[in-house]
Image (cartoon, rainbow, N blue to C red; front, side):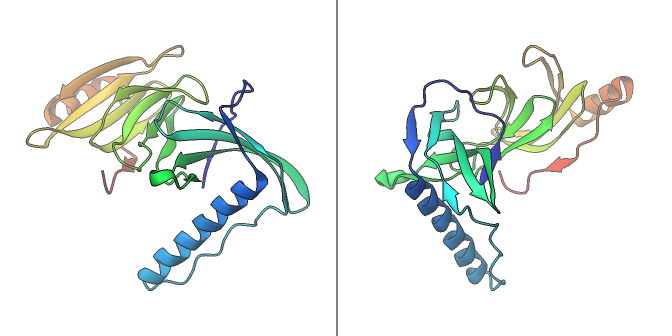
Length: 204
């Protein structure tokens, strides 16, 4: 289940009842157990489940069919608030836990997938609901620090490897430099002390 940063307090687009939240969690646990069984692995130990829940206010994000919901749940005797991403299920099955990618690269830069967990892109998080695309998809490697974000991707039609770096900015997506060949990127890396690639995408 994808836990996120703080969601906005504006009028929600919809609300998930405590029962709906519990149903989504049970479906996620069942799916993980089925995957483990198919791989002949021990069933994963689920995280502690809330003993009580309040209705969750949800707002749609800039990723189509993905919503960010503010949940208030009682966990291990304490009430906590958490922001969780959910995806709209196909065929009118309701909402499911978001199994895609939404993770920090550096600063406000995020690596984000679409609702199906595909089409990874680098984006700049404007707020909890909006992440502006900077580069992507077909990203293979990534890394970053407070000054630069580095990206390797394979360009169509022949999947030639190309390299990019983004000059970070505090108030916007920054400036993209590239595409560069491996040699050109190596020269820029030496001159600018670009960060290392510390993330590798196994499946795009």
